[in-house]
Image 1: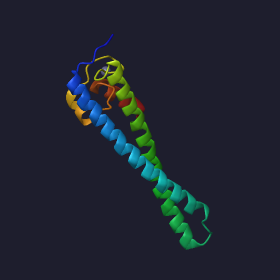
Image 2 (image 1 turned 60 degrees about the vertical axis):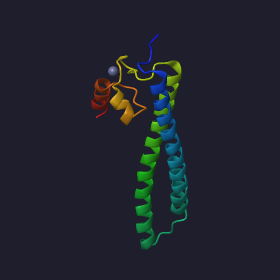
Image 3 (image 1 turned 180 degrees about the vertical axis):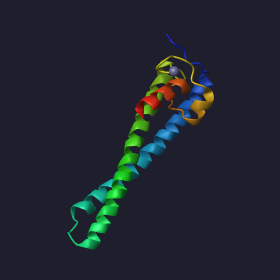
Length: 128
Ligand SMILES: [Zn+2]
């Protein structure tokens, strides 16, 4: 069994940071969902006149921007949940791909990180 490289106090600090970030994201994504709903409803009652078209197009831009944010928030929330699960099962702080230790500094910036820097860079270059 892999053992987390962190002691209980450190794990607790990371858990607190994750829970805090999770709360922020939940609030933010709820706010975005509300905005999305408003934009959606103003899209459907649009008429064909020119002024309305311009407004509709700026709303469309706004909407796709918000949808992007929303997707990222959902992804980050899932990553946070996986990180919290790894705290529970004792593998937090280890790369999920190679099992290497994830540097503490990286986790402080991004507590939901589940890859070491090397694996994260490999994953990122594959995505491009
Ligand atoms: Zn790795």
